[in-house]
Image 1 (cartoon, rainbow, N blue to C red):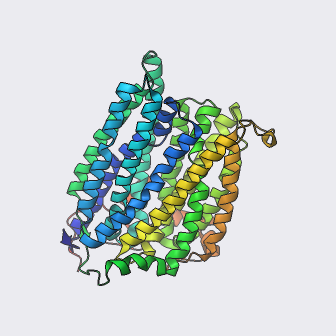
Image 2: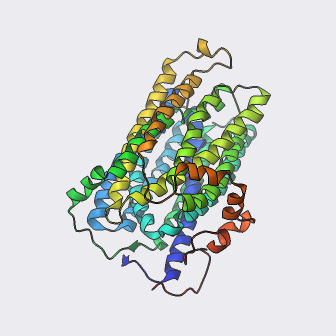
Amino acid sequence: MSNRPVNLNTILSALRISIYDGIFAQSFAVLTGSIFLPAFALALNATDFQIGLLASIPFFATFSQLAGAYFVEKYQNRKVIVLFSASLARAIWLPIIIFSFFLAAREPGRVLRYLIICIIVYHLLAALSGVSWLSWMSLLVPEEIRGRYFGLRNSILGILTITMTVMGGYYLDWFDCAFPDSPRSRAFEIIFLLAVIFAAVSIFFLTRQTEITTNNRPDAGLRTRFLAPLKDKSFTHFLRFGTLWSFAVNFASPFFIVYMLKDLQLSYTLVSVLTVASALADLTGMWAWGHFSDQIGNRPVIIITAFFACILPLLWIFTNDSFYSVFLLIPLLHIIGGFVWAGFNLCAVNLLFRIAPENGNSVYFAFWNFLNGITAGLGALAGGLFASLVPESPGFLSFTTASNLKVVFLISAVLRLLAFLQIKNVREEKGVGLVRAIRVLRSVRSWATMMGFHPALHFFLPAHHFAQQKSPYWPLWQRNRSKIQ
């Protein structure tokens, strides 16, 4: 572990390696999550409550991030913590594959119980590495290009998500047709095995990743550093909004795929295509919001995107299995949702980076992920439990195709609106006001000037092409640059 290097090429190389690592880590994440994990659980005859339980596990497991923050602050070696915990976490999928191969056809319920246990262990270890990785990246990525960098990185991962989702969904349908006598779980086992291979390649790139630290060692003791986030008003206001929002969103979010697969009886391929539509919109959103946030700040983007996210669950109530709904309304909801959530997720993380101090930032990240994870997990469990108690055909939804999950969507919309009201207390030192931000976003000239006229080349051109803050770190693919003085 070395002090922060002054060599610009070293920093650029580290930023590029992080993108390469992300490509394979995202491949693993998509194939073991996305539509594939709930689809695998449904193949094992999982109930709505069990689907909600699976969806809640990653959030409850975030309490291990407190332990991760402790190790980071005590030993100041983020790379070792990430490598150790991430490697163990990803290896957990090997026993899942083995259990499924030998038992899924005869005892699917038993495999489902094994799956839940293994997923718990996996996410405990993954959360441990997650807070260390966030702290690592907060020091690695210069503040003046965070919006652009994470917009670029997430856009690349969005393209990958599209590819993996389409290929995986088509493969599942093909497997059912080509091997009708084989258990459906066999197709998932092959997907999960491929995911583990991708995970190993990701770990290889992590070993080559530079760890950048500062010369400043924390003067305060561990106890003081762990209490600091709770005394920071900017952070606590943001945390209050985030926890309420996480509960409201996850009350419904695990069940949209379940609704499409079980209630609307859509094929894996069609659900994959819809997920791709969302990913394409996410790709565009990361590109757009990343550059706007560098100019107008993160708070205005969060407010605008959160407002639209409150409306989306209400629109799902009007969906059904008609041609109009399946091929127009539902794709439109996926596209709008992808674009909106790209801005919210990107700017929420960037605002957290801005609020957290350089020293002791891992504690801020741990508290944020832990408390948001707990409320998100409670939301998913509450949504699953509520769905299991509501009748399959609620009478007050007789104006559309009835489904107990639509009641969940309705309640989630109300909860999101209540959480949205808390955003008024969130502050950001840099950035513009909401009214001015809306004026900028409404201006066609602002979009053309800020985004550039050649979107395909946008991420690879220097910042001065787009009336943005110049930075020696941009673009990433540059060589033989001098040292930063």
